Length: 287
Image 1 (cartoon, rainbow, N blue to C red):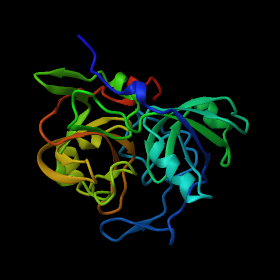
Image 2: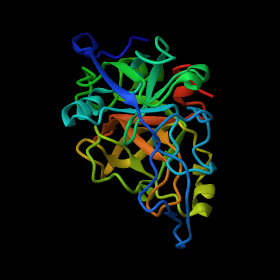
Image 3: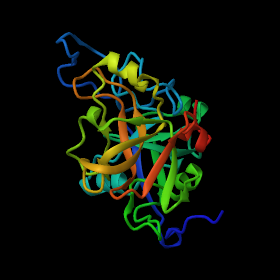
């Protein structure tokens, strides 16, 4: 079967860098449950030792738990936004300072920071402040014969690993699960090149009924009637393909985070459900 034509040869490869951040605790410390009860939980930023792509998205004693290490460049707005906008999922990274210097990893998500996963052994000797360089490639990536399909945060490495095919003029994508658009929450107001959108996961019975509580970090996800070309909005018959990049939250309107990878308005994307469709397997990096 011939491969899909892309503009991969025209993409610019560029280095960006950031430092491993320290964990952050929400101002006021307490995170509220929907019933008003509050708690203090770990979650965002820093180095997470025991959570990787392929692990569960639900069930942690944490809030917005992120796999791998969280990096940023907060000293300058331009560098911060370059780190966010130029990074794509599947880009290669290397540690350039500290005890783990020389270790190589892969970009696995974009939350409030860029998420990069290395080996467990590398994580053990990393420290906040260590610098990570990412070899970015993917912004501007396009499918030559499918101008109606927008690729977002998609590196060529990830695209090829996903094994996307075509049939009857439609792209065929394997995903771990389908989400109903009615449960999509915080993040609809953000453009789809920058940060994720959360699930509204507070209805635990519904999550179990739909099987969403089985979601794993790194799962490929499909959402029907979701147009993610410019932000994230409802459009009948549109399809978006996304990636689960962080864990569940107890806050109303928040839950596992879904990062946009592909979107189409006019039926150019179709999908089948395959529970193994996770970047832990596709990129050989996970739990």
